[in-house]
Image (tube, rainbow, N blue to C red):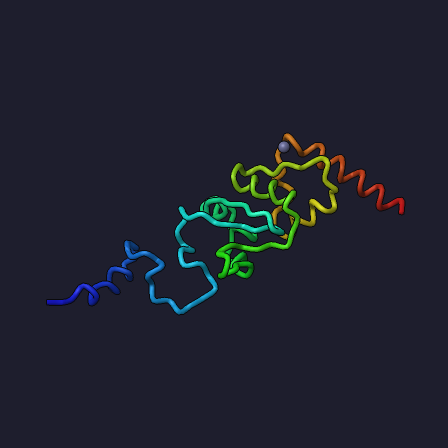
Length: 150
Ligand SMILES: [Zn+2]
């Protein structure tokens, strides 16, 4: 009689996936063990301020840094979190984008700084919500005029 372990590889190959990903005999990598579990929580440390969200929340936007495998370069095995040496104030808005699909422009923030964070995380300005778009556009125009004056 065949042992259980003999047919395990077949079950894996069919992609049924009942075997926890963490048990897979994949060579050690810097990737979290439960990486592919969409319902796992993810810790994101931004300059010491720790944010938590669901992995599937980040997976919603695969064209961005946090939604893609690119974030694995920022994964810290020791603390089991992603570390970003970026502005935590702006990051709050970036995370809200993953939750709601809209990016809000914080009026009190410097536009250049805000756009720098957006481009670092790979987020396009066309996702700015209607509620904030006019403010963003006006500020952008002001900024361009100011820079042209210099
Ligand atoms: Zn808004």
